Image: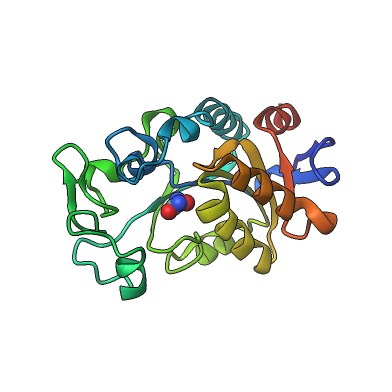
Length: 227
Ligand code: C5J
């Protein structure tokens, strides 16, 4: 099959066998990205996260045009909270009304619960028919989701990562993938954090030591390699 090469990837050129690759879009959900959502209610600036949407949309379009597999994840729990560990439920000592499963507002619904309004993917990068949509109860995309089996069934060996937030769910997912033998590349401008210095540190620690977790490239570099 076709091989896309990104010559300017960090820390050295990244080769992407297009038919054995998937784009993994992590947690582009209203909960984290919209004013009035859960992230905003925790005093985070969602404007910082939204900066990555144009690059993420361009990346998604380029990967779709290349015929690549696309996976979208949502950080989401079952309505009965049976997949929510007490350690996650109580972390941060949230006040009543601000715990996972509580109703945040009429517009957003229950916090981090499957299929609630806030748990939808923002329209700029919404899934289309034929793409995998996964609910994930943890930070990493491989924990309790069946993603390993889905990728193995398709012979996928290479993963591109985009999404929010860079140092939490994106980095955790990329590290999980790296330990499972996938060749991973973080698409830097298609990922954002509420803390710019955390994003910068995550990109550095992923690519340091010869790419100890994987590569990094921009959406434009990926699109150019795929075109
Ligand atoms: C966070 C995520 N930051 N998707 N979730 O809690 O990174």
